[in-house]
Length: 217
Image 1: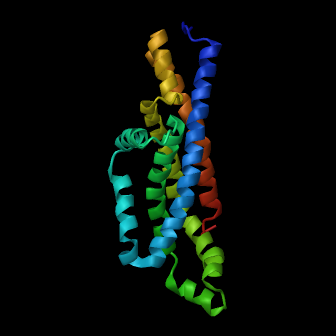
Image 2: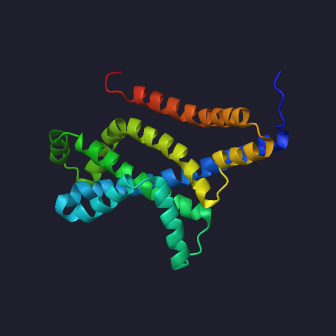
Image 3: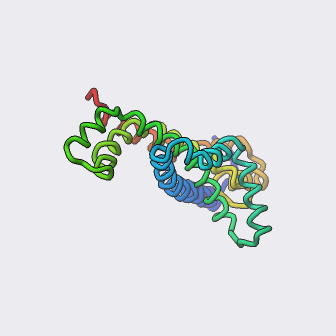
């Protein structure tokens, strides 16, 4: 029998924190993926010379620890007086962080499509847009999906760092309860279980789609 001071209201508090984690993750991954697709295509089409400044900026977001990015972005927006809320700042930084990795995922996916396949598409009369939409995009999706699923799960876990901006997400909510109830092991076990329940369906969905789209099936 487990003796705990945890109440229903505390569990609701954790659920709200989990909801904030999901919201930050969903917004950041959606915006970062869209930006990553655009930048990935741009890097392919523009070539190394013209895409060098974009590549340099993306390298910064991939190289600098996310916590430092969050703290610096929060300080900068205060200095410039953007008036962003912690939620907005968190989503902007995480979106750019996601885009930096998603750009490489998209670029490598496009490069995995053989030139012969693309030449065949052009010989059938498809223009560049049709080639990208009907030939390159489906093939790139199959190749890029596992890496994108891994990125999504990574961003969800990294979203715990937004607690430093004062945003009450799942980990911050658990820390508040640990401080108040002094039951760190039990509360962190619940927190970990919630993270697992959120992550597991995403991972299984990715595995299912990967098997379904496998060219060997």
